[in-house]
Length: 522
Ligand code: FE
Ligand code: CA
Image (cartoon, rainbow, N blue to C red; front, side, top):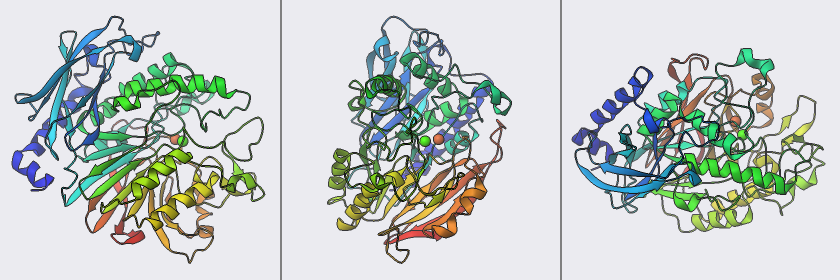
């Protein structure tokens, strides 16, 4: 019995709708009250469990960053097989304290594979709303299909999170957040007329600043409803810390690595405190191990990659800034094989994971556009953008070569960062359009963030024939239906980011056929 049959038989679809309606009422009578203003979340599904998360914050934006909490508090958690929490199958109590901002990360195990569960927390005499989580199929199971969806770049100030609301309604087995989940920076007052709402304070640079930024984003009803209804995988891009940072290097060359690592440690800690990730991600100083792989029966493996923490310094920096720019071909540092986008440890881990992998599809979830993009800066330079994979082409080549060498089945990259939709054929040699397509790529547009200029990028497409589609004029997300023979990708767009009640529609569909890398019309 596959998951969909199971759901139909068990009436879980109806239950999911009940939860959806329950959360939809949040706009009127907010169920996320008392200590549970930041909602509940689940993540990192395995065949027998998942991570459950909440953070107690009765005053979510308290100036000390502690959400109105002080003393340690016992938090009870319960997992049930029904949406009314009558049949409780797992429960326990954990302590929340101020060291991790009264956040709770519960690693639930011993559950049955490939089915929904419902959960809630109890603390300070109050119950949280009921969330829904899903376990993955058993490692050797043969699921017929699954649906996943991915999102990136949700700037709170520049738009409402309608795309998150519609994404929740996809009822996806898995939701992937691919970075720029928050924006550390705050728009200057000069552009206030373009904003629909304001950040809680100025640009975040310390633990209080980052904590309250996450707290603000999590008070958004659409984002809370998405987390309460879906199980997710998380990776990050730059704005969880600072625009265009690389490893220990700030975009500002005047900031020393030592000072920047202090800021990064604060940002990573706040990230951990707000995400449904397991204890192995608990930050050690300025280090947080996020990359990992997740198996969905024999249908798919999700490799979740970290493109920021371990990367080499941006090439050919232009003082006093290290931020991304279009580097011309005389920048030989860019193509230096000693440089890496993932760091050499993560590259090795990834290639080990390719070896002997037997799943029908392999999804590489990461932050940025992978394909080469020969582009022209507004200032006239022709070359490659240094802050993305194009700043590290030798590293990209090693990944693509390893896929080919290990005969990894049906590799598909998904990404974000560039605030526009892209569908690309990843070539064995980008400088030879006739070379084989070895992998496929889909990049999702932003949930709200400002797009790049459409005309400027549209002009580049003829010079980059491996780019099969580009569109920057819409905000939205991407939904993917995967079965054993094909992958169908739907580009979903909202009507207007300034409208809190924006509607959704399908802009475009693409297909990838098993055994044949490359983008096909849907
Ligand atoms: Fe972004
Ligand atoms: Ca970014």
